[in-house]
Length: 161
Image 1: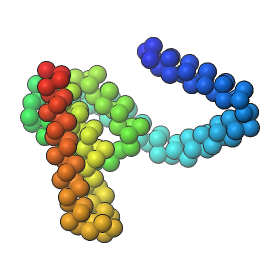
Image 2: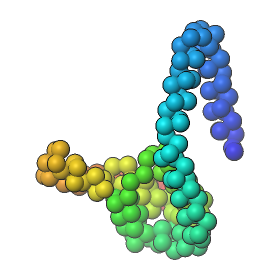
Image 3: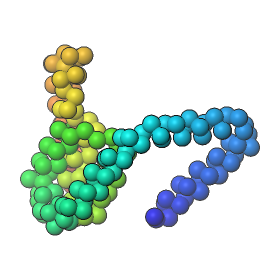
Image 4: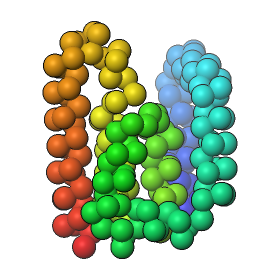
């Protein structure tokens, strides 16, 4: 853990103590709600973290670099955009995965494309979205999100060059 993590934990502890001093009952109620939400998320979190852990253990950094590394260029970006568009992953899993991918040799632009499309393009939910909001609206939203992701990738390419 880096110093940022310790700082976040420290700030959280201090703010919790301040809240507890200000209103003990509300603070305990908030802690209980947070605990219940965490327990509800565990059935989703554990398999996702296991999957990511196994995937990163099986897939070597060299393989990641070859697919979406700095040297993969436009093909790596297209792979990132495509995988992100057809995959669903909650943000609290996707962002740590992005950090791990970069740590294992993936390029910033490629990971940016993956993460932005994971959060914005939803081909997994297209059928449900098209029923609720009509096919034209679902297509337009996904297209605008994909264009936005490409713009983000271009910006990342300029900033991290």
